[in-house]
Picture 1 (cartoon, rainbow, N blue to C red):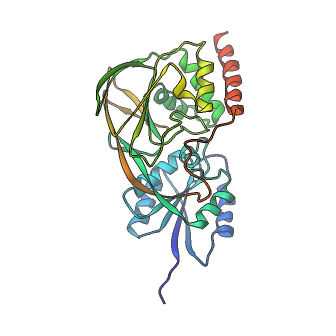
Picture 2 (tube, rainbow, N blue to C red):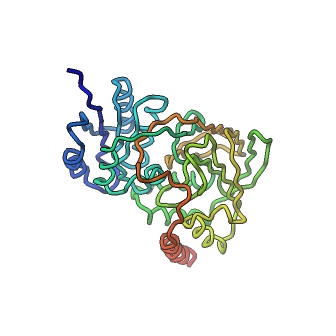
Picture 3 (cartoon, rainbow, N blue to C red):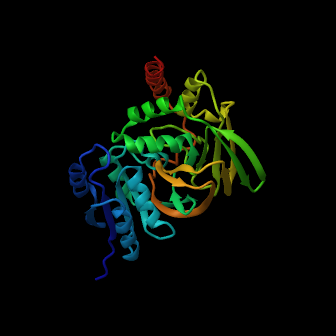
Length: 326
């Protein structure tokens, strides 16, 4: 008799986020429909192990490979699934959960498992920055600099990230960038350059509110240097999905960009920092990632965001800024 069940592998990063992975493993056993799916759970044992496991899943013809962890785990798994028929699933357990939020995957593990149980999939774009795949955003300048500091902090979460942003922004020196795309060459002095496939960094911070993962285009965001007095409005715009209206922001779309900067330094891809040289190439790969979708929700590009997140961020930011300055 032919086995008509679909195969699912859950790749669990036991050290990501703050949720109990044992509790999530119990939920997997309780929620996944055993009459429709053959399920296995594998825990990662070292950095990069998730990518190795996901590659094995592809070679074995696994139908769905689920990343149980934060954005780093999701990137590790997804990079091994591109250009294959194995679909990415996500149980978000990190502090940002950018890709899960963009795809409208519920933040509660039980609800996310219900979506996986439905088993509906679609294809999405992904990006590459100097051979490194990314799925939400990549960039250089201040956000990459902060990603380095955040990685060194040893403490995760939005509060730590805000603290690093405010403290480092007071002493960060903007760089000059030359950007070449299909339309020509442009030069900018910028606080940061972001190339977005998805709309947000994570935590509902929308660097590219109109970005779609199915349009075959990068959204390129140039954030010009701004004063300390303009920072609160920048924070509000970031969470209110109105960053494109800010006069310090320049945006355009492209299939690929070449960026030259004055000095070597950090870049980030999906929040993970890496040192790279002065010349950076970013390209979009259309419809190269198969992923489990939420059949009740569309990808996150249009719904108005609540201002509560922005105002909370702003109050915390001003308090930290005041403490730093005095």
